[in-house]
Image 1 (cartoon, one colour):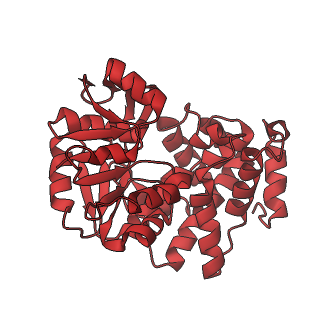
Image 2 (image 1 turned 90 degrees about the horizontal axis):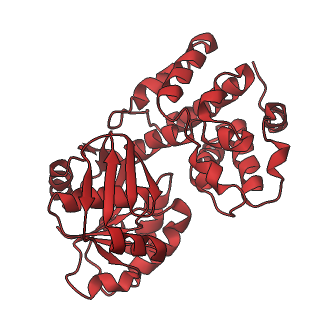
Image 3 (image 1 turned 180 degrees about the vertical axis):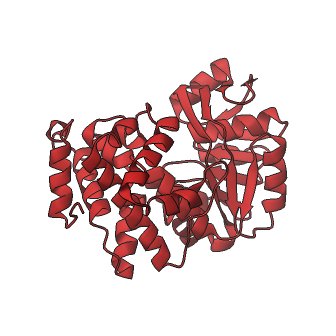
Length: 345
């Protein structure tokens, strides 16, 4: 199949590079500065797993260019959640209407946004658990090699799974898209907003007893919302989310060191993605912690910690509050959570 990578950042660059190195035709839709770097030096892949150099990638800077030559058979959508609506509109406006769109976006309700524009039958929910960074334009580093999950019953899935497996991407198929996406949400929200608000590394969260309790409660709220929907956390490729979903309800004295160990081995000394949203006006927190809040509201499940984290982070993202107010000030964040109705047991 011919793949169009819609959004050549870390995720799109990694998947497209691996697929292209395995012999699949791949076209990369990229922003101008990334496209220029790729056209000059190709696309380099390093870190965990096989290294590779895609010397002459097919790169475009407008969506319409993808249909000027051999049309792609499938689109891998790898943009941020806040760009999903614009991407859906752009794809819907194309004269071609038959290609499926694989949604690799983090968060909740992106697939519904795509389905509203493209039709539910064209949307394939997916998730990447491999941790990868674009350390500079055209240069990718895999930090944790894990895998890719696909969900649903689309007719293209067998071919996708085969191509991804052959490219070394360890593809797994899951029957329930909502369960897969909500399970991934648990991994996305862990320490993300809290670290960004406090200006801490994730490994610091579980060294502070009260902040650790706040973080654990945010995860518990998410699992309670999932339970109200009839969803249980499930393991994803090389990520034991089902174990996490049980561990957070163990006694605090056990949960805190376990999560501290998990975070330390994973993203411990890496700045969370939300850190880079502060002052920039946009954040995926609405589709992550915010989705816990909105779903909880609909289902009658209280989510005060996620509400406090969402609103506090958004105030920093939009420049409404000086980041210095919360920088290294856990007392301020704890007071904010208390004002939203959370009380440390």
